[in-house]
Image (cartoon, rainbow, N blue to C red; front, top):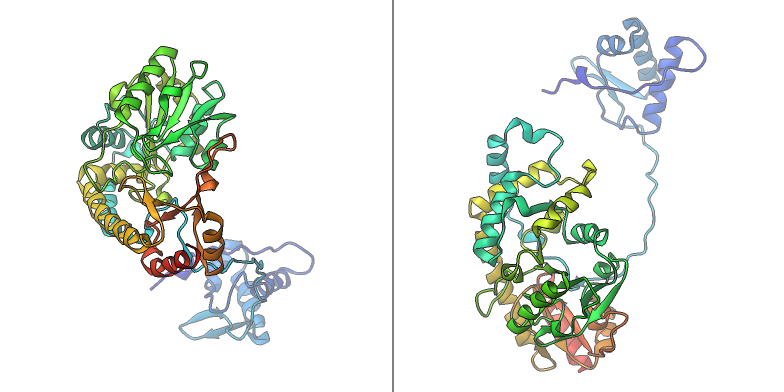
Length: 445
């Protein structure tokens, strides 16, 4: 049974009139305004009197008056309760026009319905049990050593990253890492001519680098720039991997100009036709920053990312993380560390890799009569090559399906004119939406 005697109530006893009158008015106002909704059980008169520093009889008389007026009810053994018949004012709601979207197949999120809740809870319990007391203090801007150690092992094993825990800085995601480097690097930064526009706007200024079936053309990197952002494992959104010659070219350029390659490994774990290719960072840890997150493999709600830094950038990055508000939840860090170390992360990735592979196969089969699919078998999205980009997007929207035209991802300074559709098969709605989307293609192609 709950102890209602220990509940706190805010009652304003200021104003004119006697103390009982002021208490009665304050209680009546709390009920009328729904701060005390119907069914709320009030403290015993003795308890409330002690909290307010007034006589018990004053509280009892106020309760009795409100019972007589119908605001409260009192029953032997049940205490004093706000009457059910008192109707609170209707809530003020903001009317928001919502589009009639049945299926959202735009890119960015994984299938969030597949979050491994049971395994995550187990890791949380183990992490809390093992956590030292100092872990509940203000925190380390670099991130918990348990997580950095687990990440170093995992990234070396699965992505070929040359990672030392002392070179890893935990952040709240890719965008958080970019914001910090934006304050350190001289603009403009070179970016791939196709990518996420919100990520480009994080930089003070950018210039585009041409992209083809072999990834970004790093042989065209200009010597008067100091940094380039690449998606080598699976170019976003076109879907090609960075060719080995171009990987080597990017590293050679960084060495030559004293520059930096920022490697966005957003979905490197999800390749279906063969084993994932290793990270570029493994070629030269002193000229490549490796950026990864938990957003694709687990959930964007965790807001946990990581940077594996060249030694010369560790202190400058940490100097930018002086505000405690920038620290990531200690509990989430410890839980993720256990999730990685226990093998639960690997198990979840393997399970989701199989699920996404099957979805991609179904997508290719369903759209093959109308369009071709470009890029490697990887990730959680596919690019459909078609000259009917605008018509498909419009028809899909009319039928309640949101998809992304390829033109959305093109750099504003790019001269490329490719046309296509970017479709997410990682979205929770994908299995139910596929047949409807195929009907859109049939109507437009």
